[in-house]
Image (cartoon, rainbow, N blue to C red; front, top):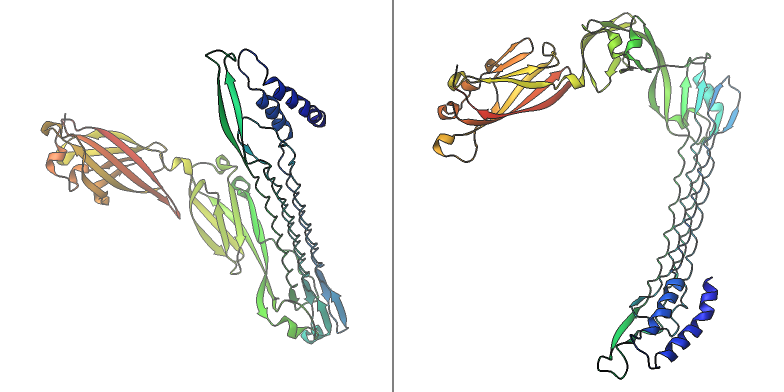
Length: 465
C-alpha cells in the first residue's frame, strides 16, 4: 500500500503546484496536503536489533559415594562448560527517502537509526561434583585420583552495531499560505520557514558478560563402611500437628577440615576444604500446651524446629504469633512448654476508656480490648500538650514528654490507670477547662517480640464530680 501511494505522490505534487498559481477563491495551502500525508506513511525509524540469547549454563559434575579398600580409583566429576551467549543483531537502517523535494508545513525530525541488540550473557560453568568416601584405613584415600574442576564460563555475545540516522536533504524551506480571493483587498499571503533536523544515530549494543567459572567439587570422608542414614535436621509443620505428637529430628554432624588434596592421589583437582563425619545426632521434640486457648484454635500457624550441632532444638513460631514458653532437655527428649500464645493482631488493641478528674488526681484509663495484659508486659510513654483558653492561648504547648514511671501505672486485670496528675506537669495545665492533646505510646512485649501502639486523646479537663 505504501509503494502505491509513493508512485502517485509526484502526480499529486505536480497537480498541487500547478493549481496553486491558478486564480481561485478561498484559501490556498496545497503543498502541505500531499507532503504531510506522505510523511505520515513513509517516515520510519530504523528497527532495533534483536537481543542475543543467553548461553545455557554447563551441567554440574556427578555426585558420587564410594567405599575404598586400597584399590586405585580414577574419577572425573568435572562440571561442563557454559555455552557462549548469542551476538546481538545489528540495527536496521531507517527509511531516508521520505523527504524528496516536498515542502511540508511543519518541522521535520529525520528518522533515527536502529539500535544494535545487546549480546547475550555467557552461561556459567557447571560446578564440580561432590565425593563422599567411606573408609576404614585413611591411607587408602591416597589411591583415589579425582578431577572435579568447574566448567569454564561461556563467552558473552558481541553487541550489534547501531545504524546511522537519516540526514536532511534540505535544512529549511518556506511554505506560502494565502487567504482570501486573488485580486481582492482581503487576499493576503505569508511565508513561514520550516526546518529539518538530522536523525540520531542508533547506539551500538553492549557486549554480554562472560559466564562465571564453575566451583571445584568437594570431598566428604566417613570413617565407616556403612552408608550414613539420611538426616532431618529441620521440620516445619502446623502448630496443631504438635498436639501429643513427638517429632523426631536427626542430624549428621560434620567437622570442617583443610587439606583435601593431601589426602588423595597427587594431581587431584578438588576444593581444599573438606568435611569429616563426627557423629549422628538424634533428638525427639514435644510441645506441652498450657495456654488457656486450645492449641487447635491456632491450627494454621507454622512452627519450625531445627536441630543444631549442639543437639539443641530451636523453636521458631510464625511472625504473627507471639509465644511465651520455656525449654527443658532430658535424655534425648526436648519439651517446650507454651505458657502464653497470642495472635499479633491482639497485642495492639489498647483504647482510651476514660479521662477523669483534674489537678494531681488527673488520670487516663486505658483498656486492653483483647484481654491479654496478664501475659504481655506494657510500658507507657506520653506527650502531654495543653492550651488554656481562659488566657486566650491559641496554640498547644508541650508540658511533659517522657516515660511514665511504673509506680504511676496501675493495672486492674486488663485496665490501666495512668496517674497523669503525678507527673511533672505545671499545675495550671491540669486545671478544669484546659484543653489537652495527649499522645500515649505503649510498648508491648512478650519474650523476644515487641510492638508499639500510639493512642491519641484530645479534649478539655472537666471539673471533678
